[in-house]
Length: 165
Image (tube, rainbow, N blue to C red; front, side, top):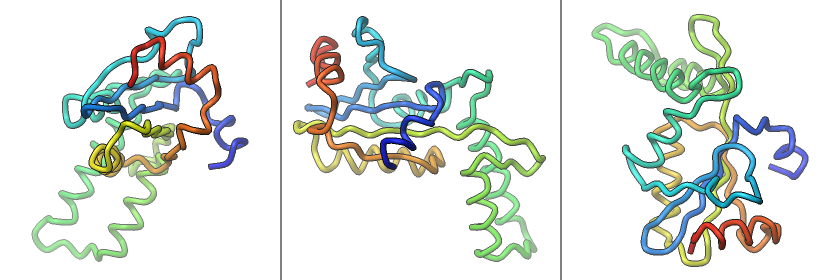
């Protein structure tokens, strides 16, 4: 994503993940509040961490898009594995692509989320793999791996105040 694309994403459709030392991860839902480091919240990897944060995130429209998309994918998976299913892998992949873009089978269009992943210099390769796994599990179509060295000074100051290492 270029800078212009990052700017057009609605704040409530964005979550930023900071991958830090000792397998720690923090997130900001929406835009950072540079005056309030409590906007940076700790979480963990896995089902009760990043996955839960994404599942429970509500956009400004009052929608939990990740939860809705995951439910639709579960139904698609069941349809594909159904006995006697005539769905080909190509058809499955085509429908999955639509789901990830927020196009549900019932005609409903849900907003899609953008996740910005910022691995700090203290994060490990395994942390990055775990974060990318979460994107796959949560059917995130748009995610950006952002170089922490290119962060603004405001962002660096905010995460330092929040104790992110």
